[in-house]
Image 1 (cartoon, rainbow, N blue to C red):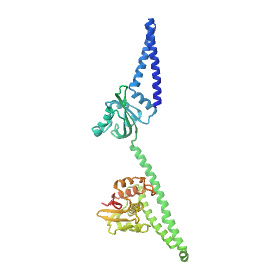
Image 2 (cartoon, one colour):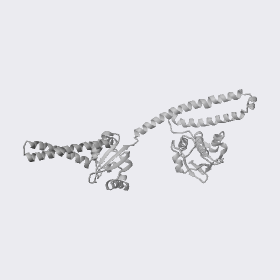
Image 3 (cartoon, one colour):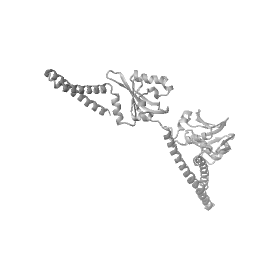
Image 4 (spheres, rainbow, N blue to C red):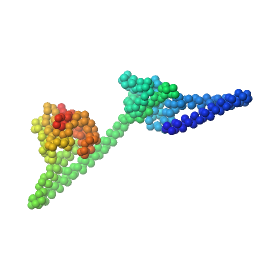
Length: 410
């Protein structure tokens, strides 16, 4: 773009120089010859010289609109607006009109203050913006929230650029930015695509997992045990393997139950989950009994009762337990679950998390960049979604020995 502008200016300079030379030559020729016929040449040269002088002066002294018009011709994807030093809109390209939802005649009647909120217009921050531009001649970059014709916020990422003339006076302020506004239609389209995908995925999960976990594997395991003679089981010491497979199957069936409840939200197109009053201790103890890490979890028996969907709630708490054991460098890794008034506490002796760190890691696909354990960054976000779906609150606090996760049950 800068090369194009340099070439245009160079050719205009050459043209201006040539026309000026011809104009001076015409004046000298007329003075010395006093030929009346030359007056016509002199008038034509004077007009051409005047036109080129005006254009030359416009480009080199006040070149904002010239630059912007050329820039707009090459880049219609960005918002390009010219403001006068007092904030009046001088020019706006078609992308600007589309983003702000004005016609050009409407837009050029506005001041910059008409494009911001009343609160921001009266703020010290707004005054500093114009002080930097007008008094300091500084470029100001960032992400800016502006108002369109309907008063709706639009998000623009770009910069304000003060334009100085040959005398170093600011003649215009150019605002060039990219519209990053996520419109309501875009949000709805994204949500529709996500819901369609989730509904389809839930049908696959419900059908395929159910067939494997609740039909084929249990039947196969029972058939295998029935056909294996005791002598073979003892000879090859298969009892431990059979016990582990049976326990693993039972735990997988519990996990499937949680998945089934979770996908019910999409199957029945509702955001309500079926809950009942349960003993928290009994629900968690039964859920964890067949896990390989259940001996590392100390569950107080006086956890009381709560109105929960036991499959989903236990899945969420299990995720917190496994995080406490996984992100843990202690020799003896332990998780303690107890009740503190209306709060269920899951406390570990791991690396420790502040509530700010916990909130950050709660975002989907967010992982600590320094951790070496594998994962996809989804488990915690799903866990928190389940807790909040119950109407509970959740937060974390770092302790001297690890992390306390607090689930507010009321």
